[in-house]
Amino acid sequence: MKKKTKVICSLLLAAAVFVLLYIVDINNTGNSMLATVLQLGAIYALVAVSMNLLNGFTGLFSLGQAGFMALGAYTFGILTIPVESRGMVYYLYGINDVLANAALPVPLAMIVAGLVAAFFALLIGAPVLRLKSDYFAIATLGFSEIVRILIGSSPLNTVTNGSLGLKMIPGFSSFFTPFLISGFCILVIVLLLRSSYGRSFKAIREDEIAAEAMGINLSKHKQMAFIISSFFAGIGGALLAMFLGAVTPTTFPVKLTYDILLIVVIGGIGSVTGSVIASFLVVACKEWWFRFLDQSMYIGAFHVPLLKSGFRMVVFSLVLMIVVLFFRRGIMGDREFSWDGIAAFFRRLFRRNRPALSGADLPAGDERNGGDGHE
Amino acid sequence: MSNILEIRDLVVSYGGIEAVKNISLDVPEGQIVTLIGANGAGKSTTLKTISGIVKPKSASIRFQGEELSGKSPDYIVSKGITLVPEGRRVFDNLSVAENLKIGAYLRRDSLKGDMEYVYGLFPRLKEREWQMAGTLSGGEQQMLAVGRALMSRPKLIMMDEPSLGLAPLIVKAIFEIIKTINEEGITVLLIEQNANMALKVADKGYVMETGEIKMEGTGAELLANEEIKEAYLGKQKK
Image 1: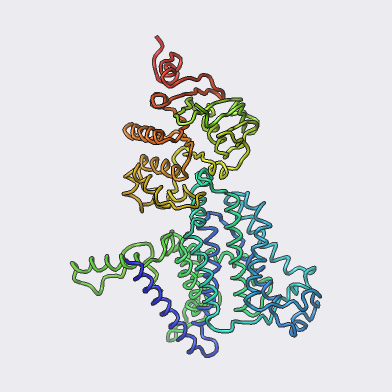
Image 2 (image 1 turned 90 degrees about the vertical axis):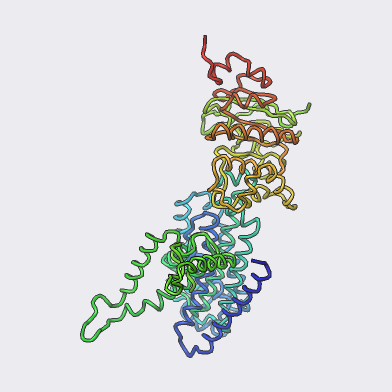
């Protein structure tokens, strides 16, 4: 495929996505589930891609994502709650004098949120990155818990409002905001991964000794991957704070990290496209499509057993197990979406259909791991 | 002829055990120097120390007159010493082209000419440019490992057992390539267990045993030496 064709295709795709989002937006009266899922999906996609940058591309298995999101969300919240309503938010403990009037516009606060998360990554990176595989995972998991507990602890009451959490955080000014911010950040990560810097991350994942022998400074590059990943996790946290409007320490439990890890695994470790697709799928399943499993149901006079609050998660876990058992490489494996790939796919499909002459009822796709996820 | 690399009194220890005990060796510019010896003699440790991956206990490593001991691996690569690590260690899930580009990671200029140069040396790699390195055969992977090292435009290339686990025919091809590289002006420091092949191509050889250098001489001298014949070339005692 020619480069020009690809650019045209990409622009068409972007336009199509925009039109679809626009349609969702104008039909969104009050609480449309579709709109909610799409927004939350976009936010999770950013965090999942940032986690994939570390886990999938640099080979550092981190479980600290929720902690960095919490740092981002709280930094953003503290800086953007309107000054006049701060008395109301901090009614119980009062607010720290320094912070009482510290307010930043939303875009700036978002960058600061990312920087604070990145700064903490820099602080803990030096000791933690010396650890290998599982130990690194445990250390980052511990960090994430420490952050959560510190945020809710009483000495920080005048900063984080303790266990009451922050509320009245400004929401999205337009329906498109989370898509634009998340899309832009993911684009930056993709460009980074395609640069020689990103290639060096992959080299570290593949073989540390060989990477070192090629002149790649291991500790510096791991540190950078950790910081960049945390920066975008912080921005993701800020987006989540905007989406929810209120955050408490319980918004960022360890489970949040696992949810994101799940998205990364289902999408395919080492595939940005996979993370994005899986993020929308997982959010839609968890928040929407599987909801009916939580309500009791009658078919005629027959009361369907098992369906009650919480059953959704049982089914979801089963689906997960199936994915892990039979589609171990996730939706995309470590491949990426590309127009060449799509073209080759259709060429193959076309070639296969012609001699068979049964066109229509041939399944759209061969037995490649879990189909192509055109969702 | 001047020495491109001079090592004096190199001591390396792994947690109290001395793997390399006070060795000194010279690598003259433009030559092939080989270091032969049995398993555990300290050959690989010596190479890893020169490339900065392992830190020596005490040493003087002078490369073109500059002291390199204690410097980081990326600095040493940038000075023109590249290691082809033992067991090839190509990046399995990256394409051949990407592997080569990583070899030139520290360079900021255009790589196009160098890619062509490597593809010229190894036409096989050109054919497999977009294939994942993990799917190549052992010999092709070794060619890729050498090609990758050449991408950093080294003055001294160090190879750690390039013949390991390869079929005899391919070993021969690899040694041909080593000669070709050398003829183009790159100094080669070669570690081998295949002493016969190594000494045949080498201008100079060192024999290492349990962390010490036991013997040195030109390739031909060592090949003719009775002790070496017995210990490394598999000749029976009469």
